[in-house]
Length: 192
Image 1 (cartoon, rainbow, N blue to C red):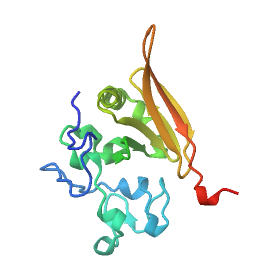
Image 2 (image 1 turned 180 degrees about the vertical axis):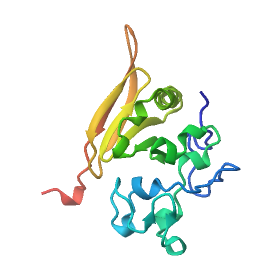
Image 3 (image 1 turned 90 degrees about the horizontal axis):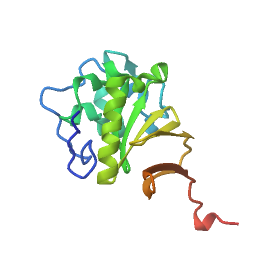
Image 4 (image 1 turned 120 degrees about the horizontal axis):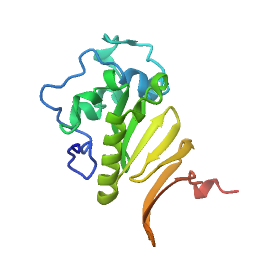
């Protein structure tokens, strides 16, 4: 299994002006129109954007919000991501998140990430990430699972502002990988 190529330690690229993989384009894929949060339109994750015609395109493409204009999924930007990860087929998006990568999964196919061709790749990326300082998570709506080299950790529903801490420690029987949810920080000014 190959690792996607990034320029900043993240396997999905550096963000910003990310070149697209030659020969790849959205085409009729509109999964980002369902799986992405679009703050400018108050569109939550997991619901179709009202401006999207599934498998056709965006009705406001020329004037689409900034968050839509700047988003490119990992399939489009990472040469090491194979054809099976095309979002229309995979029913999930690979995307860069702060500190790692996320597979954002369509709630209508919430277990598709567990299929061998996807799960094996997620595990391989997890092993690579632990060595290089980034992590892999799977997200179905607000429910998050950390993919660790030796296990998966259900972190549950992630609220706005909460974070994830993933690491390892040596034990007498070998390395133990751990993941936990970090509560949102209370601003100092907001303290009673």
